[in-house]
Length: 254
Length: 83
Image 1 (cartoon, each protein chain N blue to C red):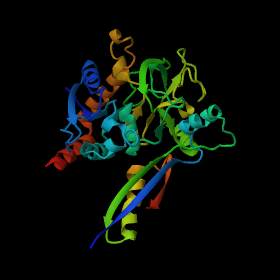
Image 2: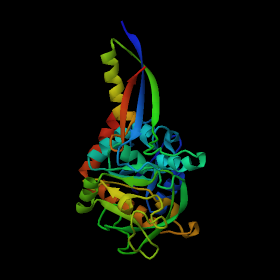
Image 3: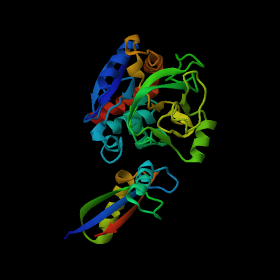
Image 4: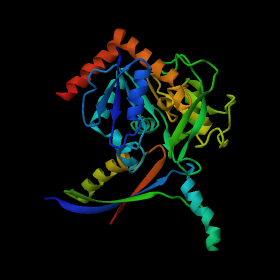
């Protein structure tokens, strides 16, 4: 079975949900402690939601300098699949693994509620099993989720297909940045998730793991986790890139 | 021989970055009966002591710290102040 690592920082609070979500999606979930330097040979890595290191200074920035992030960055540079959810998105943005930054929500308040997101691309390791054109309903739970990048970077992201998810209405209609009902944190161009240029690292603010079973109110997020586990299983069968990354991670531990 | 140098790093949102905290503070001015105050930006101030051979060496350390950790150059700018 494909082993998927879930990084646990002090202050992570969605790690168990994410571990469970990975298992529901057919993977074997492995918890990776932030102080370890090895990724234990996992096929892909998820950085879960929470408040790593209390979100002190800026959300995600202190986690960025933890020992495991050195291994995650090396893994990503070698083509390894990395997904950052909510606080995990903030961590990989601070680490420069994906473009942009997450600012304080436009309305200043912490937001815990369901949103709908459209998937701009269904041909990525994160979205291959998402039904094209159908908005996904899942929760957000964050204080700093307003996606920001300068206008030139935003244009590049759009041009290069690096916008992965956008906040939309429940019917799937696109909205303006200022539409507080559909895009409650005020993200620029209503961006809810982005890809890196190489297409192997993605981050999103909404929580697919919290929408991975009907009993949770929605299982729309499971398609994302299934896509990820499926891509990871292919990578571990055929990908010399991830094998090399796993070896590099193991080397760093010794 | 090293000496200790005391600094403060002031981090503020870059010009053009929406600063909802600054806007909220600005919104409260009316309640105080204050007029004529605008362009409020809310940032943070970090004070620190650096042990180094001289002030120039200490500043190199502070600049690196401010660039890599204390501020996010995408969205914030900083000023180093000798105390």
